[in-house]
Image (cartoon, rainbow over all chains, first blue to last red; front, side, top):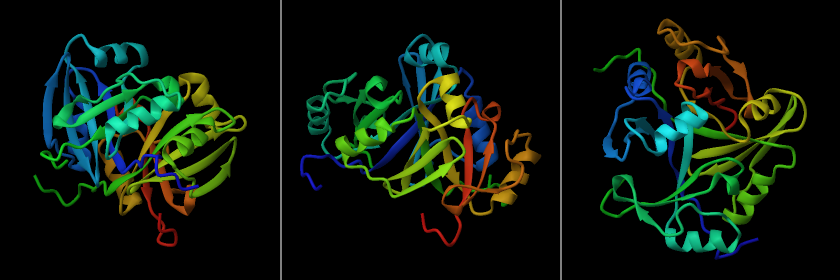
Length: 142
Length: 142
C-alpha cells in the first residue's frame, strides 16, 4: 500500500567491518581485488577508511585505541559491523522510526564521516543488525 | 599498479542477514521502509528472500529447520551473516584467490539462489567476514 510517510532507502551507503590495528584486511582487499581507499578519517579510538564498490562503499573500521570499535571487537570479534542506508531526510526518518517503536542510539542526526548526517538505530530493533542511516551532505558527493 | 589478473568486484550483490523462523525482520522492514521481497526460494533448512535496495539487495535468511542458517544463529545470534560481491568470471576469481592463499569453502562455482553461480570464501581469509562471490547468470537479470 502506498504511504507517503514511509521513507525510502535510496541505496546501501556502506557496509562496515571492524578489524584490529594494522588494517590487514584493507591491505588484503587491495592485493586481491585492487580495492583502493578513497577517504580516510581518524575518530576517537579508530580510523575509518572508505573503499568504493559499485554505488556503495566498504567501510573499514580499524581499532587504534579504546573506543566503540575496540569494544565491538572484544565482544564479537572482527568481521561485519554495521550496514548503512542512505535516506533523503534523516530527521524525518528518525521521527518515523521512533513513532513506530524503533529504539534509536542517536535520536537526532549528528555529523559523521565524510561530513554526512548520520544516526544509528539499536540492533535490538533490527534483528541483531546495527543499522546506520545517512543523509549525504550536498558538499560531499559520496 | 594496474594488473590485468586482478579481478574487479563489480558491485555489492547482496548483504545477508540471518533470523529465526517467522521472518519478523522481513515484515518489519516492509512496515518501516516499504521494502518488498522480489524473490523467495526454499533451501535445506532455510528460506532465502531478496529485498531490493538501490543496485543491491538485502538477503533475508530465515531458519526453518536444521542447516547452515540455524547453526549460524546458534553460534553468533541473529544479524548480519555475509556479504556477496558480483564478479565477471567466478571460476577465474576462485583460481586467483587460491593462488593468493585464500581459503575457499567452495573451490568450484556452484548453482545458488536465483540460478547464479556462487562460491563462499572462509571468514578466516577475510578478517572474520563470510564472503560470497556471485557470477550473475545471464538468464536472471538480478
